[in-house]
Image (cartoon, rainbow, N blue to C red; front, side):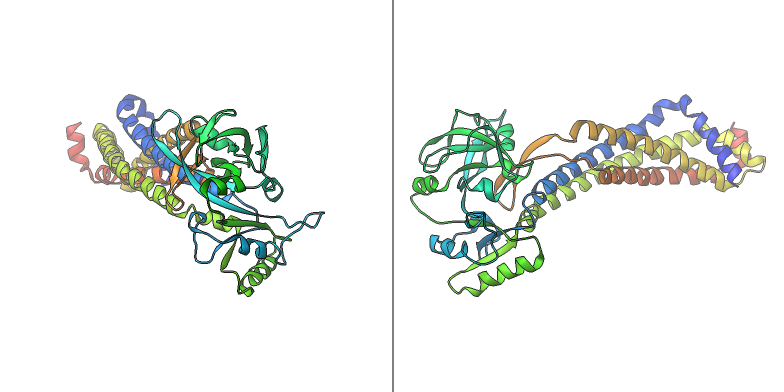
Length: 395
């Protein structure tokens, strides 16, 4: 049986050059399906990794109790004074707590190459942010000075939006503020932000409060986080909630990641239907051309099963070739490609890079093989059911 399958399969494959045009229908069609699927899933993967890579396990984010996002959180300066002295917060050599209170607003900045504006995060913070977030570093210019209306911009924001070069002015609140520096944070979500002095931002907004606090815990153990949570809960003056920093940012990617993933599979499914019909037509044509050959093999003792299997193998091999083509193009074009998009959960723009991972490439190949199997199944069955005598007479 195996020898018969091999013999028929080799015969089918040797005949591909004589019908190259029709075979390319399968290759190109399935390549398009895989390319689109991998590209859209790479977008979702890049967005998820950008947010999930933000933060450290030994840092906690503090928001008002019941708030799911920084934009909806508010707590007073008195709360901050109590919070920063709670046990469990790491302190530096001078005994100062490694903690910062921040404020979070949105500002409209135009995207590069477009006249449309985008909601960019303006984070009011302090120069201590570099102590609490050691992954952040100034890569051009300098840090803003305390008490001055100055801006440092994230590298991702500078790449995606207009007018964020050092020396330019950007609208924050109550006028335009000069840009004095550029920072990087290893490609995480903070690189999509503009950082300003908190006291200056409060003055421009004519109000003083905090939206969030980031605290450096003594270590990354779950018990340490739980002890800090208990300290916050145990103070009746505080109405605050605590999350581990990576957990918070990972939760901010769920809605958009889900949407893009569903969109990717939906578009791929619609395209896959067209690819299946293309494969059906191609394989039916291939079987029709080889009617006499198949009948001859059946007449000299070949079983129907090797005929079915050989047609399926041909269809899957063509689909596999198409998947490699589509996956290769998606990797070459989209892997590392940087874009920005609106995060539905925070109403702010996030800059991120597409990530074509090995897992996505494998998913694309699996989809292609399934399409090839479906497209080759009915022609394979038809080939096996050809009446031998009728087919020989027709030849």
